[in-house]
Length: 211
Picture: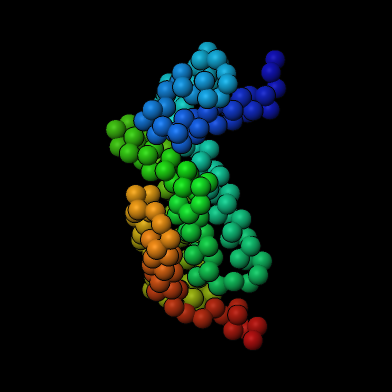
């Protein structure tokens, strides 16, 4: 019997094939046959793990989502380790959702293309809702901590503010996908920083106590 690690390796190999096809030809061109060819495996092996193209795309999206969340958590951990403001943590984390650099651009493209497909498929929509809920929870938790330490106004609704910040970031990412370049990237970073600063106008009580 194959070990669990073998199954995980095979799935990762197949998902790498999905990402390769999507990156070269677009998500709409992903098929089980093209994925098998790009992954260097048989069509039968892909079908062994994935009963349908929708299952394949859902797993590919989950892999991208996991990569992004790991990177966001790492950015937050780095910010926490140096005693940064909640404002800085939010900017660092949300910036990971912008298509800046080849890797992040590929991830954002896949995420946005997947969202388009999810409009027509309830199973994929469920995956998309779960992904956005995970992001919402992280941003909402950061804002709740900001209320506790004084950076965020006490009357701020963390859930609503998190929803707004993610919607803004999502819109900026969409613009950068179709209008890349140094100036749009600079504008996007500036807009995001300005909005986060508006949400976090106060002084951090921990930093005040340390002075």
